[in-house]
Length: 317
Image 1: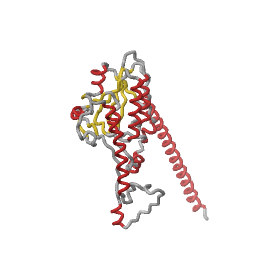
Image 2 (image 1 turned 135 degrees about the horizontal axis):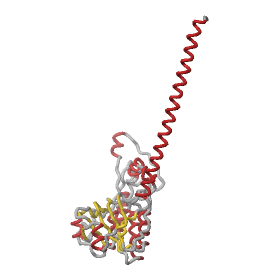
Image 3 (image 1 turned 90 degrees about the horizontal axis):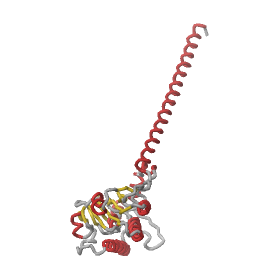
Image 4 (image 1 turned 180 degrees about the vertical axis):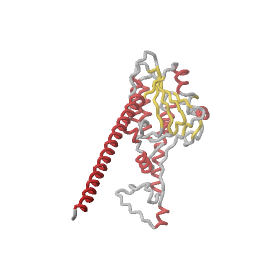
C-alpha cells in the first residue's frame, strides 16, 4: 500500500469517528432533554393532583360556624359498591359525620341517580332511618335533581320529606333481573354448549342454555320477594302519604308534578328552597367523602364496562 492510498483511508476513518461522536452526543443530548421534559411533566402532574385534592376532594373540615347550617350529601350516578362516591360505605360515612356536627340544623340528600344496587340502597336507607331515630331533632330531606328512580327513590323514601323539580323523574318502584339468550343463535351456528354443574339449578339464567320453566318460576319469586321489600320500605318511609294509584308499584316513572299528586314526594323545590324556606337557613355545607385520587384518574372505564356486562344477571332496582 502506497502512502497516497493510506492517507485517504486515514482521513475517512477520522471522519467516521467524528461523525459517530457527533451522533452519540446528539443521542445523549436528546435523552437528557427527554428526561428533563418527563421530570417537569411529573412535577406539573403532582402539582395538579395536589391542587385538586386539597381544593376539591379533601375531606370536609368540621364546620366552625356558630350558627345552624344544612348539611348536603350528594348521591349522583349509579348506586353500586364500586361507584366512586355513590356507594353505601361513602354515603354512610358522611351521613354519620353530618349528624355529629354541633350546628347541623338539617340534612339534605341531594339525589340525581337512575338507581342501581338493591343491597347498597338498602344499606343507606337503613342507616338514614337509624340516624334519624337517634337524632330526632335533625330532619332529613331528599331533594331530587334530574331523577330519583328505582334504588335512588328507595333511598329518598328514607327521608322525612322529599322535594323535586316539576320535571324531575320519580318512581320506577320495581325490580328486575335482566340478561340475554343465545340458544337459537348457537343452534344456527352449530355451536354446542358444554356446561357441567353440581346442583340442578346451578346454571340458572345461563345465557347459553335454555331457560327452564322451573328456573323461570324461581327467578320470578326472587324479584317478587325483593319487590315486596322495596314496597314495604316506601310505605314505611312515606307514612300514609302515598296515593291509591294501582300503578304506583308497577315500575312506572312520573314527573315531579305528577309525583306530588301521587304522594311520592312532598313538594317542588331545590336544595336552596328547602334550606331557606323549610329549615330556615341559607347556609349549606356540602359533605363529601374523601376520594382516592388514583381511582378518580383511572376511572376504570374498560373494567367498568366489562363488569357491567358480567353483572347484568344481578338483581337491581
